[in-house]
Amino acid sequence: MKIRLAFASLSLAALALAACGGRPAVVPATEPAPVSARVAVAERAATERRTELAGTVAAERSTAVSSRVMALVTAVPVALGDEVRAGQTLVAIDPTAAEGQVAQARGALAQAEAALTLARRNHERFQALAATRSASELEVDLARMQLEQAEGAVEQARGAVAAASSVARESRVVAPFAGRVSARLVEVGDLAAPGRPLVMIESRGGRRLVVAVPETLAGGAALAPGAPIAVTLDAQPTLGELAGRVAEISPGPDPVTHAYTVKIDLPLDPGVAVPAGAAGRAHVPAGERATVRVPREALIESGGLTLVVVRDDAGRAQSRVVTVGAAAADGRVEILSGLAGGESVALGLAVAPAAGARFEVVP
Image 1 (cartoon, one colour):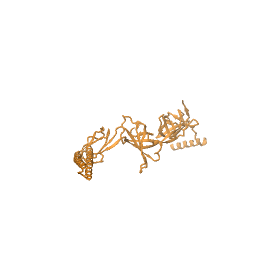
Image 2 (tube, helix red, strand yellow):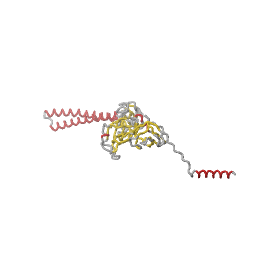
Image 3 (cartoon, one colour):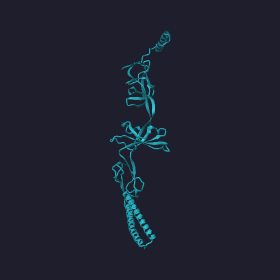
Image 4 (cartoon, one colour):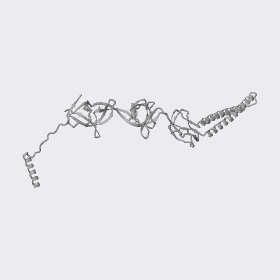
């Protein structure tokens, strides 16, 4: 019985559809909800084109302190990171060998001075004998030669004493300027040798960014000594762009990397501490380029995309996917792609409206 009723219902539905010509009813399309917003014109502007170069922060003054004495290290009274003043002892070296050299040099000086005294008296005797024709000219000349040799030996011995005393003073390795210990390379019991770095010292104030500049950028006015260059520090973004200035540039490129070494002075406040070795970036001017800018409030973030709503000539809203570049100081942002400039863009929208929605401009 139920099967017969269902078949009858289907039959009636088929007859009703046939009576209507076999076509379903058409539902009229709904108009997208209109949108109201303030607008701004995407402006075309010429922006300075800059090339970003990575670099490393270095101290304005840095040196490796060493000694001219070969002896054992007896004390290292400073630690890594210590503040030191000019003339402060950094490393103490066993002075026994140096003091022995000084004693030997002084003994040689005493012998030379005694020989000089004897040579001077002999020269005076031969001069007196020559006045009475009791000595020949040859004997007088030999006495004069011995006197001059003795005088030269004394000068040589005095120089040896000065050199030995200078080396003896190297038993105390001192800081050449006020700064901070950046590396401690020896410990008590190590052997100090001439030319071997013992302690690294860097100035506390004054920092420079050292960058390698390709040959294609070097040589222009933008990298001349004294030229301004914007610098940013990776670890301290709150400082913003620093107005650096070119301090030095190498006279030629490195034969391996074919890049010039450029040192840029950083204008840091006394209270700002930037350690040597920190990463930074120099933004080198490289001409101008045409860009498009819009207010930041024109951007809409949706699904990982950045959108801008444009009011077309028919007064309808159209969404554009854009690529955003750097932000300007006036609150506008650079649009790298998606806009050609001159479009009317909506401001302050939280979400993008439906495509083709009527766009009403509000003041």
